[in-house]
Length: 427
Ligand SMILES: *Cc1c(COP(=O)(O)O)cnc(C)c1O
Image (cartoon, rainbow, N blue to C red):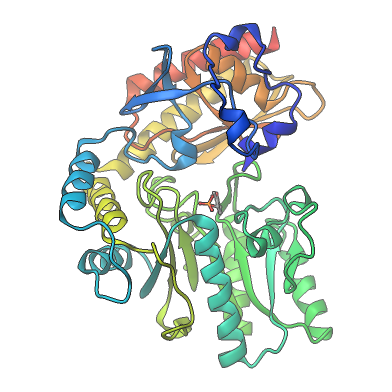
């Protein structure tokens, strides 16, 4: 994820940075925990709603939300109550037995999506692994394809397991981890001619395309929304050729865009899709969902020890029900509009530095001019000093993914902090 890429970023402050050092007491952390993340020198201790506090008591507006995960913010009373009650009742058994609340969560997801069936796991990468396995089994057993290929997009992000870094169309995530998984091929995003050419070429090569795996909006790759016409044409191609359309909804699903699923913004339905980040509001859970015709898993094909345990399913179900009860999709649309308008107004003051503001609902990006030195990390760092947490999506895009419960005054407060942060970063 982009926060990890900050490890290589010279503009992220070292521990000795005078602005940041007072906020940070690593206490042996870096000696004991593998250095897989380029961490901000900031330790968060407590949260409430859209706000978090660090170990020195400084308050921040959290427009990262655990990277588009804490949809109900921090310490939401419904989550606190559900977690407590479910722990007291039963937290983990095994999928060897029926878990009623898992069934209830699956039913909720089916009723609020185009899916007919759900497999539960623990993360986005795992959800995508499930989707890849499902598509390959479908290709072998139904389509009779011996060497199935899955098309994915440049600048995509699908996770950190071996299959999902292979699916991820960004070499920086694959470097030094080869040999990668066979059976993937990459195309530019939002380019229909490229996908048609790739399918024809692979066909001629006896390497048939079994599935196309895409994000409805590329999150880590720079908050790049999918084109409606592009996705509608892909849906058509998939229908004509019997290719499965898999959508990675890990970052944009579960209400983040103002609709339950990212694909609703594109006027199409996938055959398989995946969910994770927002699904449990910050409790680790992932899901692979599919339509009945490609529901080819049988007992023994796929499994997860923790997947769909009573604890995570009870919490995720309470998150789903709260999205509806508190009319949060409407809030996402309104707050998203407010945020985008405010960001666009700020951008007009810096035409040399900010090239675009874009996004859906409460996933938005501010793209910086590639020809200037200014990086997303510079802005993130400056806004942190102003009491606002943000996260880059690549070197040149600042990402805004607040909790879906964020209020109008909080969005205004964030915009003021951004205004100050950008002024400070640009100097
Ligand atoms: C975050 C993300 C993943 C990986 O999810 P993990 O839970 O970190 O494994 C996969 N796909 C997309 C689109 C993501 O944003």
